[in-house]
Structure formats: C-alpha cells, structure tokens
Image 1 (tube, rainbow, N blue to C red):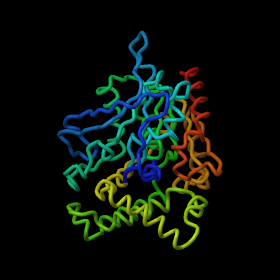
Image 2 (cartoon, helix red, strand yellow; image 1 turned 90 degrees about the vertical axis):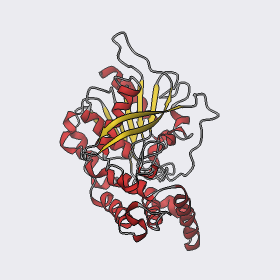
Image 3 (cartoon, rainbow, N blue to C red; image 1 turned 30 degrees about the vertical axis):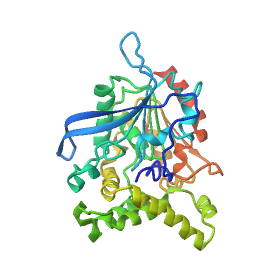
Image 4 (cartoon, rainbow, N blue to C red; image 1 turned 90 degrees about the horizontal axis):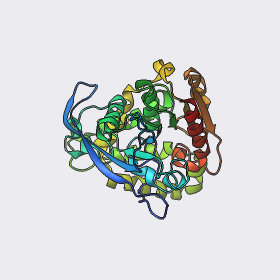
Length: 359
C-alpha cells in the first residue's frame, strides 16, 4: 500500500513528491542484489533485490571507520521515497539542517517486499518467501556493509515499522551505530489492538475467495477492506472529523482514499507486509542496546497509544535510553506525526550532539 500511513503504512499520503526547490541534492538510486538470500523461515531466494536511495557521500576516519552514515527506514507498505517529501527532507537534509546532505551520507532503502525491492507482486505471488522483520534488518545490514561499504553508522532511525527495525538494529548490532531514534513504535511484541487490526486485514485477504491463494488476476475486494481499516487507524479523530464532518462527506473521503489504494497497490504485498511483524519482539534484549537511544511517539497515535504505558516502562531497561511523547496539537497527525520532522527535529539535534560526546 504505497505510502498509506508512512509508518505503519506510510503516511496517508498517496503521491511521492520529488526533491525540488531545496538546497540539497536529489537522491541517487540504485539496486543491490543479495545472492541466495536465506530467510529465517528456511526459504531461499536466488536473487533478493534491495532498492535504495542515497544523498551525500560517505566519509571515513584515519582508521577506516565510516563517520557520517545515516540509515532511515520506512513503515509498513511504504518506501524510502516517502522521506524525500518536503515535510521530512525539507526540514532535515538542507544546508545547516540536522541531517545536512553535504555532511551526512543518507541511505533510504526500500525494505524487502516494499517499493522497488523484491516483493510478491513481482511474480512469485504467494510463493514469495515468508519474510519477517529479522530478514529485513539483515538485508539492510548487508546493503550497508557489503553493498555500500559502510562499516559504521552515525545514526539509525526509522518510522513505525522502521522504528521497530531501529530497536532491532540496536540489539543485533549494538556497536554499529552512534545513536538510535525509533519513531512511532514500541519496543514490545505486536499485541492488543495493534495485532488485532493487522489480523483483521490479514484474515480479510486470506479468507477472500477472490484472493485465490494469491493467484488472482484482478485485485480482490479484500484490498478495499484493508484500505478502509488503514484509513481508520492512521490519523487522529479530530483531523478525521475535520475532513469528514458529515455522513456524505465521510463516504466521499473514504471512497476516494480506498479507490486510490485499490488502483495502485497489491493484496499479496499488503498481506506479506502485515504478516512480517510476526517475529518482532525486542523486549527480551533491550539491555543489549548500547548506543544512546531516543524513542519518540505522539499522544494521538492510535496504533501506539500512550495510555498503555509500555514505552515509559520499557525504556527504563535501555542503558542510554530516553523516551518522548509529543503532545496532541493542531500540528500532530496521529500515527503519521513521525514524518512531520518539524515536530521533533530539535530533539534529533540534541541526540546527535549528545551521542557525539558519548561515543
């Protein structure tokens, strides 16, 4: 679902805007092919293509360690392209901005099953390997190290699913980075309402006769059900009421949203992307995270609601961890607040400053 929530599903914005009118370079795009990639499921893909975008150039110190690499990972059904939009790139990548592309080497990959990377809709359909978050992080690691020659990261950050990947990065490769910033995520297994809405979409697709075991010729009706659920979960109630203040207007807005997704996306890709979260469980290993970590959520996030208290409880187990919940305001966008960089970029500056001194 091509940028549907930007986080859990890519941000509720449908088009990806190119870089223009800003003082940072357009990204360079490329593909890195991993040969005979073995998934945690035991399945193997002869060629796994990981598409990526980069801005800036890598730099290394006298010891050969990369000093300026920044990895930014996207949300469920999104892609690295979402980070080239003005509300993100325009706040971060320009001259003297927090991640100035003239100083940093910024890497924006498309995760397995997403964007222009290998995915079910390329042809294997339901025969595509059952990938999980651990596979996605492994592919990112190999892209950086083997594909781009990056042996250390100044910062690893991500939004929603990418935020969850960030927690895993800190546990799996604790000495690889100077700092971590997961946005719109929780360091716990997917459960409760977050698991339930995913299951609703998964069940709708798998139980849809038109899905045909993944071999449909036209998109099954369940893709529309998935889109409706995503519209419901992705923003806050106040914004939804403003854009849909009457019965007729709500139907109009929802129909437009669903129609755009149904034309642009693929049910198998959505199904796989949602099922991928099954192996996410950073909880047992939070003490292994060594780098300074700043976790940022927003108070109006329906997917990671602050009332649960999970972030506040679990961050205490991260040796150099800190958590921040952005208060609800007319500038927050529910779950999609993670890509509105103006809301949290000052905290990013502080994290970069503190981690430079600490590491």
